[in-house]
Image (tube, rainbow, N blue to C red; front, side, top):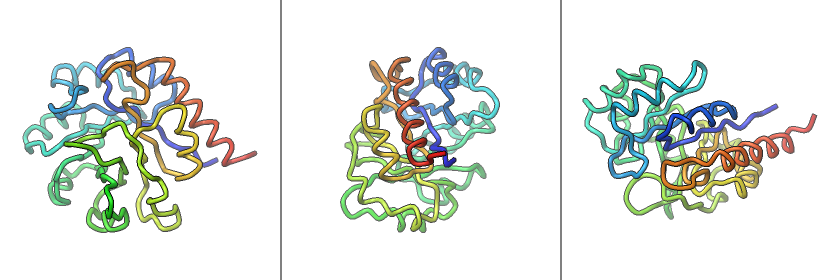
Length: 214
């Protein structure tokens, strides 16, 4: 069975990390961009990382961060996946010798396949809706603009306005490697809802089951 991976992003509370892990999250994202309401300070990050068990991937999200700041965070989480949402070039992203995901804002005229060629060293591309400033804006975009699975050269992580009500349709339409959600499972920025998390996971699993009948 092809299983859609699930990343829960923008966590700020240990209880929310525990809930996401218990539901089967594949990755837990921590925002290291001070312009975000989900930003976690270094001490808070260190505490939250202790809640992430083996075989669940911590993801550190950065926006145009200075190199020492990224290296300091990697010292806390040497097994972390990096995620870049700013104006970083491929050399900027690759210099840390760590697997990284490159976020792509799917503005008009943006071609995901061109981005895959420009960031050949990325382990995956994250397709998100265009937003004012940096980071996700909690809005969806036209999924039909994404290349079909057979044309993709890299795993696709789908983000942007996902929630329990639309993620099933997203999985069926896009067939992403993974889905990434933050605001769609929150009661407030950085404050996850246990019930919304449960509904989100259930919707993804139901779509997977529909696409992969026994």
